[in-house]
Length: 279
Image (tube, rainbow, N blue to C red; front, side, top):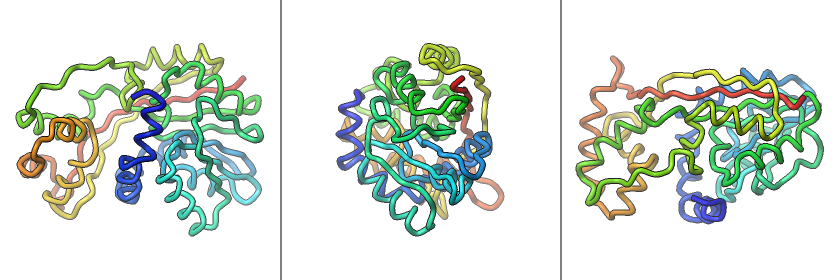
């Protein structure tokens, strides 16, 4: 989707749906937010910018680390998700603020010491200029830490429901441009390094980060119900107006192979942990 299409989606029914699921999604993605926060090593007094902050899970972690003498600012295009983020910040009594804006064009009101993101930087139409603009908000010596997805084939949390859905589709999916704006746009780490270098960032390091994602839900049916709402299979089923009920039932059966001894469902996830500096 283009930036304009992204804005429409995240401020319409799509954004509202994600806002309703925010608590479950953030629990599922907690290992990634924890990893970014740990790598960013934020200290009291620092100002932190969270790009594509969504409902603010990582922003609030950054604000807690920055303390009363610092603070965190989350930027996102989605009004519904920012509404959740502001409610969370008020409840937690943290120094965190939120701005509805396109990070590819917006500038922070004052230079920040750290830039962070959990899956929020892969959607720019023109990524190199976007990262150059983000760097303009960074103080000299500021560091950037973000996490993005490795190729789809390495992420079972996406491929498992997609494989289940394929036989139910009316038409096979058409392969798209792997570098187009979207969740997997940064799957090629060499491309990511080139983008950041072009944008003026230095000290670029890209390392694999692999874990398992715990699917929300108390049983197979609930996990399948949740998974039917996120991922490329959900979009394909909606676009082709496929009856979701038999797909959901088939997915619940498939998830049995991914249960642990306690009945919890988890699937493999592979990401890149990216760090860079504003020299």
